[in-house]
Image (tube, rainbow, N blue to C red; front, side, top):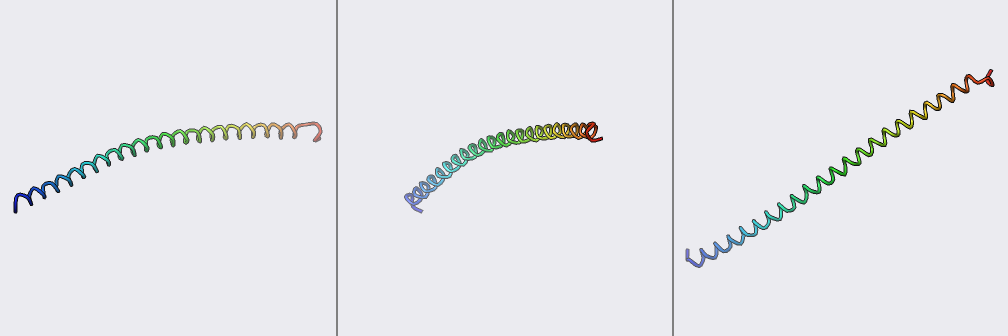
Length: 84
């Protein structure tokens, strides 16, 4: 091979290596961005899950209080003198 041809191949190889390095750096940035986004989404999901759990606890508590009130009303209606 001639020196010019070898130099041309080395230049081509150098360009390819530089492109690969740039692609790797871009992929690393994308990966970092995606990891950050995943963390944000996981945090949002945790917050929404906690809010849903709190809502369910409140709903259960409200249902229990309503059931207690209905039970008291039924007992009061059953024991009232008007029913006799």
